[in-house]
Each structure stands twice: as structure tokens, then as C-alpha cells.
Amino acid sequence: MKSKGILIVIGILIAIIIFSFGSNRRQDEVSELKEEVITIHDEAMARMGEIMQLKRELSKLKIEAKNDSLILINLSDLTKAHDGMMDWMRNFSARFPEGTLMGGEASSQADDEVMGKEELTDALKEELTSVKIVAEGIDKAIIAAKETLSENN
Image (cartoon, rainbow, N blue to C red; front, side, top):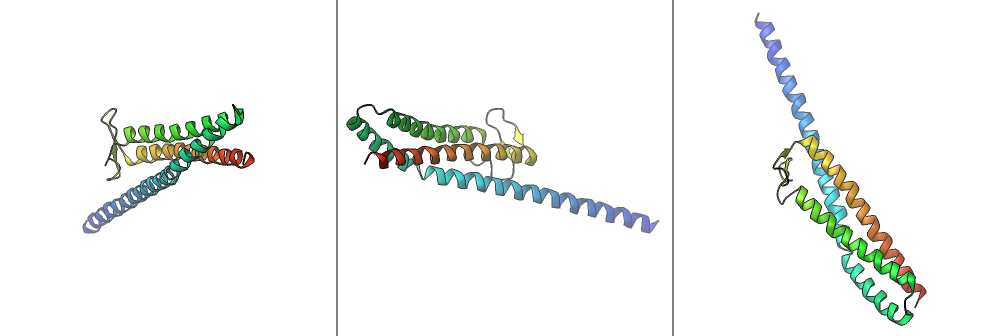
């Protein structure tokens, strides 16, 4: 009888250890995703000044070139890239209000629900995809604007 009780206790301890390991692994994934999203955001945000500078240079060139359509397209693309980052940040802040990503759970300000680790992981994967698209748009707009400027100098 004693050995049966010991086996039950050992089984419970093993289950707790396995559950704890799975939970820690999910927390690690959340931390890694959060870090990757923030890193991509930070790198893209660092280029906002470059976007503004290129817009100024293209605007001067537009005056000299008198309605060059490529310049107008570049200006539009730079504006869209800038606005895309601002929209992404606004949406991210609404989805994850300040401080909500700290404990491995996130509360949604929109519906006051608390996201579990699995939902949080899925939400961060969506944000990672979104911020990558925004960063790619920024890169493409900057490259195209620089090419236009170099062709017209």
C-alpha cells in the first residue's frame, strides 16, 4: 500500500515538472517574439529621420524638375512608409497597452480580457509579421528615393 502512495506522489511530481517545463518554454517563446518585434520596430524607427530627409530632398528636386512623376511616386511611397509605421505603433499600443507584456500575459484594452501565453504567442507572431511588412516598406521606399535622387544629381 505504501509503495502505491509513493508511486502516486512521484507521478504527480513528474506531471508538475512536465507542466512547468512546458510553461517555461512558452514563456521563453513569448520573450523571444517580443524581443524580435521590438528589435525590428526599433531598427525601422531609426530610419524615420532618413525618410523625412529624403522627402525634403525630393521636394526640392520636384520644384526643379517640374512635376516629375517618379519623384511624386517616391514622395507618396515615403509618406505611406512613414504612416505605416505610425499606424502599426498605434495598433500595437492599443493591443498591448504599456506594461501588459511584462508578466507573460497581456490584457487587451479593447475588451479587458487577459490573453494566455498561447494567445499571446499567436498575437506576437501576427505583430512580427506586420512589423516586418512595415520595415520592408520603409526599406523599399528609401531605396527607391535614393535611386531617384542619384539619377537626378
